[in-house]
Structure formats: structure tokens, C-alpha cells
Length: 306
Image (cartoon, rainbow, N blue to C red; front, side, top):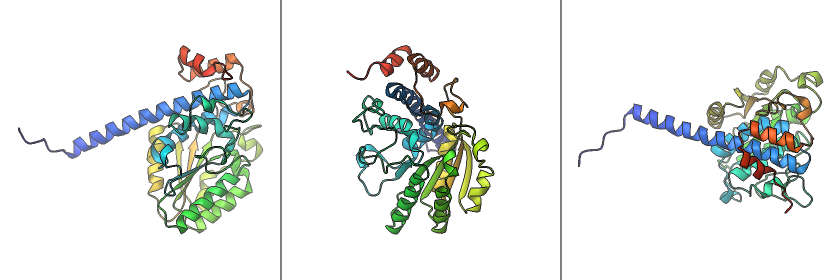
């Protein structure tokens, strides 16, 4: 038997590249499922917020699929990472990505907003063990994430806290109080992600209360700032890694996204923020646009009451 061929730097680079490509493919598939499942759940509920669920799907898939040290078998581990959905109306996407990664049953998670269901229109901490806190009143989830990060620092834990905010949510003064506090306490275990789709319930952000210059605002609060394409999985993964390596201050990722991403009749239209009712025809059209096959569409949209 001859000696094994030594691994060269080029071989290692190619192996790393192949690993990254496989990870990107897996996360992309998770994001596709997240969008499809969220549309189906909103259809069955007869109401919901599809626009922000579509815009945040890639971010959530990248977090749960690659970044968070959080899996179904460690939800009670004190050393796990934490995720807070501060934009609580994005719950259909959270439930969908959780279903994809085994935190809950995909079929059960289609019971969005149903009486007695744990999958309500906003996440409820007492209903689902992998939900860190109840959210819905905008700005409050970010403050809770701040408190978690402070507590973990005091315990000298290596766990990190991630929180996803909507851009309209940044019009809440509570957000900026928390931002000031996080920088003051050097919370480098805290990473905020902004789903920057430029739209909110009634109109474009800048027609209601403009946010720009957004990156400059966060830098002025002494946060480490990155701006990314919120639908580029590779870029999201790289940026999350850089945030995790940032020392001495919190990180914010401004993820430029498209409201209603992947569903042409929803994209960049404020009316699809929510809360809306999808007809069967609209749900079928959306699922087809999101890559679902005919049998998958039937499976998603079958009556779930039986």
C-alpha cells in the first residue's frame, strides 16, 4: 500500500468551497420550503402577513441552518444561542423554518391562528419551547434580546443572541434606547438583523418616517455595521461569521430585501404586508412561483381540519 497523497492548500480550499456550496444549497432549499409553508399557513388561517414572511425567509434559513447553536434537542440547554423574532408578525416564516429543521411538525405548523393552536399570529413563549419570548408589540423583542445578551455576559456564557427586526419597527424609540444600551455595555454577543424591505403596513417607510441614513445612525451608536443583500445566502453566511468574530461591540446586519420576495404579484406592494386573506387561486399561484410542484401544492393546500 502506497503512502496517502498529502493534502495541499489547494485541496483544502477546494474542500472548503465544496462544503460551502453544499451548505448554501441546503440553506437555499430551507428558504424555499419556508416561503412555501408560510404561504400555505396564511391561506389556511384566512389571514396573516405574507410580505414580511417572504422577505425574511433567506435570513431565517441562514440563521437556523448554519449560524445558530440551537437545535431541537438542546432547547433547554443554558449554553444554546438565542433567537428573538422582534418583528413578531413574521411568525409564519419562523414556524416554517422551525418545521424544516425539526423543531415542530410541518403539518401541525400549518394551523396558524387557529383556535387552541400554539401557532398563533405572533409567537407565544408559553406555547412553543423553542420560542424565547412573546413578541408582537414592535420594539419590545429587541429589548428582550438585549436583556438576554446582558444576562449571558454576566454569566460569562459563550452563547450568542440574534434578533430580527422589521424596518418599520425602527421607528419605535425603544429600539434606539436598546441600541444605546447595548453599545454602552459592549455586548459583542448580540447581533441584530434588519429586514430592510423599505415597506411597512400602509406605505413605503420614507413616506411615513424615513430611516436613512440608516447605516450611519447605527455607526453613530457605536455598532459594527454590515450591509448585505438579504437574499444572497453566501453573503449572509459570511456576514454572520464576521459578526460572530466581532469583539467589543454589538453587530447589526442591514439586510436589503424585497417585500413579498418570490411571489411576483406581492413583490414591493404594501398591501401584501398584512393582514390579508389568500384565495385558493392566489395561494396556488404563489406556491407555483415559489417552485412547488403540482402534487406539493395539493398537499400544502388540502383541508387541514380532518
